[in-house]
Every structure is written in structure tokens, then in C-alpha cells.
Length: 372
Ligand code: NDP
Image (cartoon, rainbow, N blue to C red; front, top):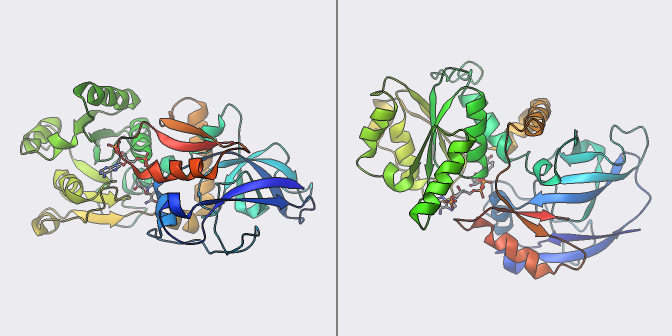
């Protein structure tokens, strides 16, 4: 028998209050199509926290599968596992392979898992660190999908009749939350695909720290980095005109991670018929838009949810993951800053739960990631 531990919650609430650590054992006899997995790394994403709080777009079902006293769910959408054993040697994955979840709400915050072989996707682990493999599926994928669907060669494929950004055209996109995992991936993918980016960050505590962050994003390929203060000021209009050669260079796409005033400013910065894609609402503020922007400038406002895309295009997802893995291996897509949280057999539940609780706090040094 394999001894395993999993973080579980059996009711929605604050992570520090509702997360418990559950110990269970896994039988050595595996069904034919099952695989036994050992966790290597799993990040703490904002969506995981929202799921525990009960504010996310979908909820896992509570079950008694791992023998918790009340029905529970294991949080964690993203992570990488090593295959320890398979139910049958003819399965397409083998002992030692690395896999990531192929389905939503896999429950990655656990030391071990038994999964159906169809619920996992094998990745080429060569030259990859576990923390890199564990953070491919959500953030880089979101940036990839948004830029692909609404950026290069968009319009035609999405059928939205917008003015598409073109690969290699040097066309602009603008984004807030630029230092987020998604934002950093967008900067790098955009640069690789010949797009230019205007990136909005929140000011740090000191000028020095702000400059350091600016330098970091510039190093990743950001063309322009502005602080939110600058972005929300009266002067921004003129600064933007200067950046875009008095508006002759178009800004066709805006990525909104934040909501509130920051999103309004993204929409205002777009050129005629530009699209603002909202994928996050970190400020928890609704978006107010001047009607004139919609009527006279024909600004389009849409949302993006990776889960929906993954569900509708599993083959495309596999292709995308392979592509991203390759970029990481080639050193073309750099890691986001991560704060590694060691999860050993002795690690206390409260330590893990507190890490999760802190995951939504702003001005973090890096995203928390459980390393097993
Ligand atoms: P990260 O933890 O990497 O980054 C969080 C970002 O949010 C940072 O840029 C941070 O800025 C900013 N932020 C935090 N609090 C606030 C606040 N109160 N006001 C403004 N900005 C704030 O996150 P991810 O990249 O993993 O995710 C970013 C967002 O994207 C989340 O909302 C997440 O749910 C969403 N997302 C959505 C997906 C989808 O399919 N729609 C898929 C993936 C992610 P600072 O450094 O200044 O604190």
C-alpha cells in the first residue's frame, strides 16, 4: 500500500479555515486503465483559491473517494506528476514518465493520485524542471490562447470580424497585471510572434523596486512598461500618442487581468475596433465603460476562460502544451518568480493552508508552489 496525503475541503470558505490534510492509503492493485502517480510540484493559482472560496465559475463535486469523514474535494488544477505504476503495460504512459492533468479540477494538491490514463497528458520531461512542468498548463496557455485567438491571425478563425493583429507586424497590444504569470507569458509569446506590448504594473513600495520590476519585464521582451499611476493619469493620453506615433500604429488588443478603473483605461487605450479580453478580475471591481467607446470606437469587450477552451479543443491543447514545453526547453519562455513551499510527510496542514490563504495577496515576491 502507498501512504498518501491530500489537502481537502468539504465546504467553501477561507482556505486557512476549511483546508484539512487527509491521510489515506492506496491499494497496489490498479485497474487496467489506471496509473499511480507521485506528485512533483503543484502551484497555488488564484483560481484554486476562488474555487475553495466558492466564487469560481465551476465547482468540484464533493466525494468520499479517498475516505474523508464528510464528502470532500481536493483542490489544485495544475501540477506535474511522475508515473509510479500503471495498471497495464500497454498503456501509452510508463513508469518514470511525467504527466500533467488533462482534465479540469484534477486535484493536484496531494502527494499521490490514482487516475484514469485519459485524465493525464504525458509531457516530454527532458531538460525541464518539475516547477516548470507544473506551471505550463494554466498561465502560458492562457496567454497563448488569447494572443492566438485575438492576436495573430485572429478575426478569421474567431469569426469576429475584428481587425486582426498580424504575426511579425510589430502591432501593439496592451495589458494590465503585466507582472502576473499570464502577463509575463504574454510579453514573451508576443515578442516571439513579432508583436509589441505596453505593460501596466502597480507601483512598488520604492522607486527602486518599481524600476527593478520594469527592468525585469523589459528583459523578458516588454516594449513599454508603465505604472498604473501613470496609466490612470491625465497625461497618459499624450504619452500613448507618443508611443503609437500619434495613433498611426494601432493597438488592436487589450488584456485585462484586473478590472475596475484599470480595465476602463485599457479599453480607452485601444484603437478603433480593438478588442479587450478580460481573463481576470484581481481588483474585484466591475468594469465601467463610456458608451461612446462602444459606439464611436467600436471597441469590443469579451471574456476568456481557459477551461472552456480546453474542453472544446483537447487536440489543440495538446499541441499547445507541446509547443510551450519546447519553448521552455529552448530557453525562450522564462519561468515566473516562484516561492517554493516544501511539502514533506511531516509538513503541517496549517503551514500548507496558510500558503494558500496568502496566495491572493498582492505585491508577492512570487507565486507559491508546493514542491514534493
Ligand atoms: P499571479 O499570481 O501570477 O499574479 C497576480 C497578478 O494580479 C499580479 O500581477 C498582481 O499584481 C495582480 N494583483 C493582485 N491583487 C491585485 C489588486 N487588488 N489589484 C490589481 N492587481 C492585483 O496570477 P496569475 O497570472 O496566475 O493569474 C492572474 C489572473 O488571471 C487571476 O485573476 C486568475 O484567476 C486569472 N486567470 C484566468 C484564466 C482564465 O482562463 N480566465 C486562466 C489563468 C489565470 P502585483 O504584483 O502588483 O500585486
